[in-house]
Length: 305
Image 1 (cartoon, helix red, strand yellow):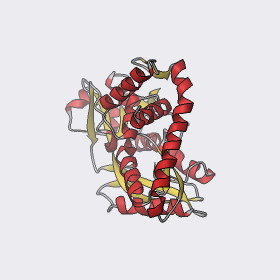
Image 2 (cartoon, rainbow, N blue to C red):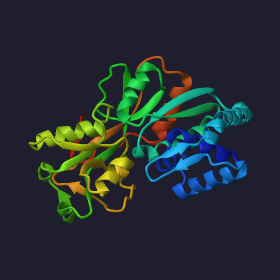
Image 3 (tube, rainbow, N blue to C red):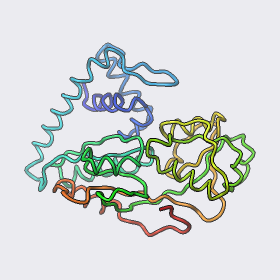
Image 4 (tube, rainbow, N blue to C red):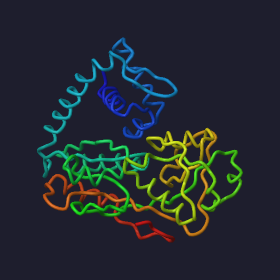
């Protein structure tokens, strides 16, 4: 029984979404499906109930989850024990990440930390929304995380490492889809699909802010918990949405992306950590991440703050 099958099972059991789990594991979704099927074949049971709407653990899946997590923890201890002789820093760092925009951040960071500081255990925690990262860091629930500016919490520090361009996502048969760029005012009468307003989504806040500047309040007809669900609803014709350049890899049939007309508008993406009391392991990960993804020059256009 391969550890990679067990890791795939554990991640999918946490995410309950093949797309997000595959991104977290840095593999293609079909490969993840193959690993899960092979594990089910080896165990002789079905671990997940799969439907077009949801993925759920079966009774057998719930039963094996605890032993799988213990096995993975033991394997991690063995690996770290074997490498401690060459490691300058030992510790555990909990990293909070959210959404499809983290796909280009988390895998290379995990690889770089493992190579540079094998004594550090990197624990990944899904936050669903990047806007939750400052609160989670300030409370001590995570040691560092990735989110978008603005960050209002005074107990945390931030460093920008990327800029994401705000774009429009439309059903492919929408009249505005024929244009290369869409003016925000032309969406005034459109139904919107968006993240929930109560969860801490910087993109939802930016959507409201930009719409008000264009002279209207967005009429949100449907809320969805992640970019995959939002864009799928847009493709189905439920409404339009403002999204980010970092999620353009999500190719949903019936969906098109278009630029906003006028000067480009960006959200800054930042790493967040506590202002005081940063441990040596967390500082080492922050240093590695700064080498991996230094602060880029500000892009042309407008940066929302």
